[in-house]
Image (cartoon, rainbow, N blue to C red; front, side):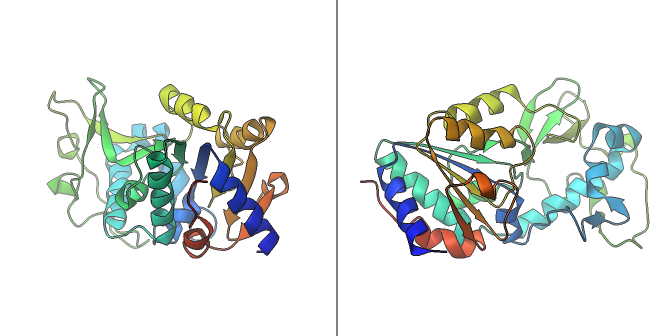
Length: 269
């Protein structure tokens, strides 16, 4: 990274009255959370994206819950990395100074919250929430395994023996309805309230920081042009150039855990 880019970024950051940050899978990958994309993105013999869908749920909800039970187990054993902590500390300083800060994340693992981030906008939901298909209630659930029937299941090993879970073994709401992960699956619409909160955070911001994501899938793809229209400085932190690098004013190449702690170590001017 050039010192000029760093100085420009930190100068804008110090003066910023309103900051928006968008994070993606790259931030969590540094904590050991699988991205399930590209090479090695398989769970057993399944493309992970094929399990994160309403069609997969209709075919075999037990298999889908096995997959998410495995993801919950993995996330439970992972800790926030220095990038998560740097963002949480930046947020605390800006809020204390009476300035606006919005963290928007595509991640569902809860590591931002573990690091101390307050009320991040979770575009894709949360691993730690469930939704009842009967009454529609959304509740926090940190049970691992999700029900006793899933204990010892969920191995990603392609040779793991397949088993079918009965309807009685699926997690249930107090009303008796079946619970599903409260995450946004492929083919599903994002929550309008989350979209509105994200847009409000980006609209009119002085600085938009994009970390660990290429931001090419909507609605995230719309945040960079939105911020740019209002004259915001657009900064990117990614391990390699992405599809939005050409739209950014400053680009820092490397892991967020290595770059963010010193880059964000500033106080409001």
